[in-house]
Length: 217
Image (cartoon, rainbow, N blue to C red; front, side):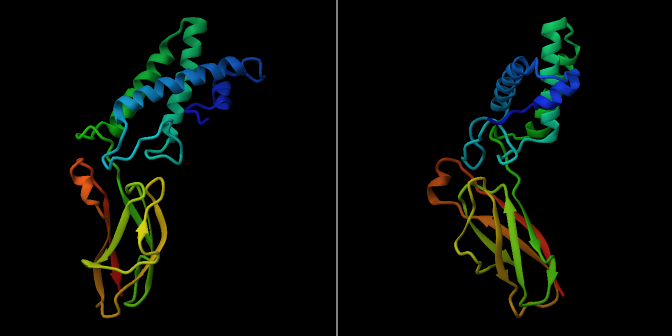
């Protein structure tokens, strides 16, 4: 099971060099997992704005992802809880708990809809090229198993693969299309859009899009 805190880091903070406290500290780590998950669930809800389930605990493969900052705060929470219960010193616990609240507010508090708002993004290579050249596009934070279309200069492109469908965490990679041969030199919009099934609208669900600029030379 994934944890927000790391036993080795907790032991380093507490200057514990042997394994005598491992079982006890792992118990604290489990408690902090539950605490952080409860805070995250309250903040994020159960589904994102596309209607996809938000999976907890967060990991480096979920959306949103487990970040270094959240890992650091979780380590501080474990150490703070241990010190509070063993020495009655609550200072670190209070500080770490405040940092957790600030982290959640800064990372997720702006979503007015009450559902976690994804941030679809795309990368592509090359970033410029001649008419007729092949472009490879990858993306992340679209809807899970969502059908996508690639548009270049407002025109829908044939892609490989076709259809283009995102994976289990809303990502895709190594999708290619060809710049139309008649395209003149200049800067054009490259856009990837999610195709919304008809029945999504009646449930208030959304799909994502991301855009960038591509220069034809």
